[in-house]
Image (cartoon, rainbow over the protein chains, first blue to last red):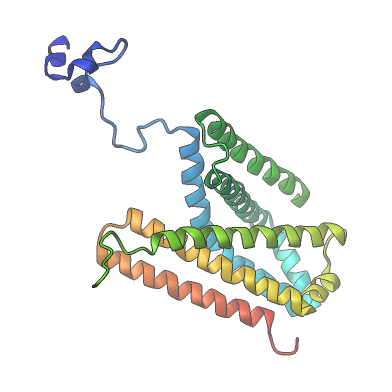
Amino acid sequence: MPTAAAGAPMSDSELPGRLPRAARPVYLNLIAIRQPVPAIVSILHRLSGALLFLVGIPLLLWAVQQSLASPDAYAALRASLAHPIAKLLLLGLVWAYLHHFCAGIRYLLLDLHIGTELTPSRQSSYAVLIVSLALTAIIGARLW
Amino acid sequence: MVTRVIVGAHYGWKDWLAQRATAVIMALYTLLLLGIALYGGGIDYASWTALFAHPAFRIATLLFGLALFWHAWIGMRDIWMDYIKPAGLRLVLEVLTVIVLVGYAAWLVEVLWRPGQ
């Protein structure tokens, strides 16, 4: 709609390959926006953190308590963690910990002004996703 | 003359710093535990209980736990602040988070210093 450009600032309508301001879609729906990789790493950092708080910490406390109680309790814990569903849950929590760990290291480096440019920050985001998934896969392979 | 700072509550930068300091403590503990497990060639009941019989390891674990609970408080509060708009509900969730975290801390103390150890 060329007439819409009339109301838009001149600088916008003159830029080649750009829609005039009024014709540009405005997406405030987070699902509809195609998120850049650093944003995906960021939201997974939150999700994994919340998961660790709600499920990871109580499960860890319970497991350590059982493991130290007696040789029988230790053996019983190992047996109950050997169940496929328990292994799956454990694997999910291992991923949450590893992702949170790797993404956290990335944030610490960004705080030290390391890798703040666009390209390295994208690369480090991919690295966080890949390293945490790869380590989860290695641990998963050892679990099964 | 009264010096007044009129921009914000100023807990933000302290929390920002605490989040990073606690993260470093937890990362170091993680590497320590991983190193112990790999050095010992795996963990069984005997080596596991021997590890927790060591006071230094129990104290290190308590420090890890306290760092974890403090870290979780800041993180969960940030999540509630970002996504829960009604102030009353947010307050309830924040209070519940504190109660749960203090409960976790007490539980950890009980696990580490159970009677007879």
